[in-house]
Figure (tube, rainbow, N blue to C red):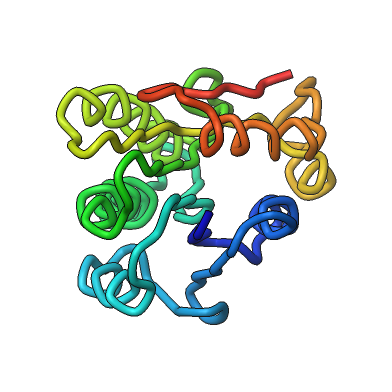
Amino acid sequence: MRILIIGGKGTIGSVVTSHFEKTNDVLIAGRTSGDVTVDIADSKSIKAMFEKMGKLDAIICIAGEAKWGDFDDLTEEDYYVGLKSKLMGQVNLVRIGQNYLTANGSITLSTGILADDPVVKTTSAAMVNGAIHSFVKAVNLEIRNGIRVNVVSSGMVEAAYDKYKDYFPGHNPIPMTKVVNAYVRSVNGKGEGEIIRIYD
């Protein structure tokens, strides 16, 4: 398969990329590096990326940001960071990317445990994750050409445990093999509209 991974050089993305590139033609998109650069908060940048890539069999997004902070400190503009990047960025990847997928192709988005089990300082991030879950379930009712859209929602991964453990007291770090298998399930399986949760 010809697979585009947005965020393919990040903490999770690099591990997912190394798995898929063993048996597939993998292309990487990133904000500053990769086979092509993209700012997913900008729909024109997304369109330009797909124009350079040509036809694809699968799209995986492991990118997008949202502001963390105390609820009383978050401004309206802080919320728009997550709305424009992680939420609308991934919505636009589906909206635009469907036109560059082969029949029966797949799109895999990424969220996280905050949608179901938020911690302090995550009102914005949790809101965005929950919205993506609802979007994925709804878009599969209408998307054409046999395209499947799923989302991988992971707990705190082992590779990020030391950095974020103070935010997630008592949470079990998720082995990267489990996370990779969730993306494999989305791309190579037949599920559609699935929220693939890996929380323990």
